[in-house]
Length: 537
Ligand code: TNX
Image (tube, rainbow, N blue to C red):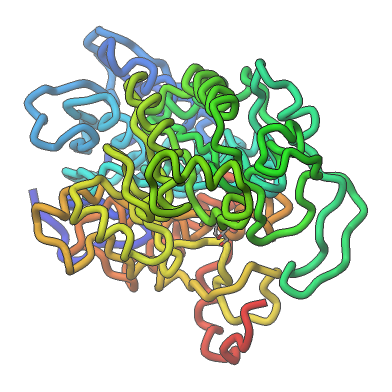
């Protein structure tokens, strides 16, 4: 086999970039005669592949399970010999005679199919028939991810994201080997998850009467239009199953003890003030906190029970962010509790509050995950930290031997502006161009190799205060979420922005065929012509 000296972008534009790939001479020709052969374990993956290829082929390739095929085949199967490639690694070998996808585990075989789709000409993503004969370049690929957590957070709380759009995005994320979908389901502006025991959470909490127009930092104007929506438990089960079939774990977030205004609007007795309040109509940090009482803990345990019933995720996110403590400070009853527990202050009370729920989650074999504020007042035992205010929280947590997911606003907050173009749609602020996302290294230099093992991976977060439509959502996600996927998957020494950019330019045809709204990579060339943004809104 002769490896080509230089790789042709239009032929080999795989995102995220595989750990190793060698082009050899020749092609496998995919025709009407080609069958997909699988073993029992990979049958469902073979069917997904057949269905993904079908629209552009104009026919659905046959899937044969547990049989030798006399015909040219795309062969999927488990090979325990490949255990050294981990839970998600795979090999993909294309020769003129056969296409062979192998991994020690099903996830790896799935990722091999996502790579295979990107080895085919980009037109294979077409939703209408293009040709019945396709060339797949002969290659030898061995690939495995750098990190086990490759995440994306969507904020359904600020603007509701309909189920169909979530399903669409799951397909697009899986194409890029993202394996964690974090859903931010509760906040001041909306409660989006049906809880059978507490129906008012969605009857009342899922709707706000109107929404601030423009940037909340300077606007006093409201749109006078109700906004809302929520996921029924049935819809969430559909999302979870759809994601699981594509090897994505859906991590639910219930934000505590702050960001609680919608819940308190539904049940004022949950709040410190015990007084009515409306679902928030503007953005920012609101003061409404859950009251630290046994009744409220019972409520939260009930809610978490229903959440655990829907989401098999080993991680349950309990928020912990931006809980300004004014209401706890002003409450005699809360102050008496701090005294009684022998705690120093409200930060320690928050740590105690979250620990109660951490214990409950542990009893149910789940792991508590929280934003880096959970470090304040003492990190609850066993908690995993999402570092969002830069990487400092992640460093401190890893040094304390806690697991960490890196999601620093400085590198992966996709609600920030992606260029200085004055025509960019209104965003929360900040400046996060594509190359900045791409330059992120989830392992801080400060950590020893031992501590670095606590960095599970990286995740991009898309907060949706200023993202009212699904088209806009996709525009903010793509291509920056793809840069994140490469940062989290590809070995560090294989990360090169110029190479990424070249592959992305080819990849855009695939995104367009999938009807994904993205910011074109060629626009990067205009960036020097724009003045730097003077203010963030
Ligand atoms: C901070 S990041 C928040 C969110 C906002 C976001 C906007 C985090 C844990 N909390 O509530 O939407 O900033 O960038």
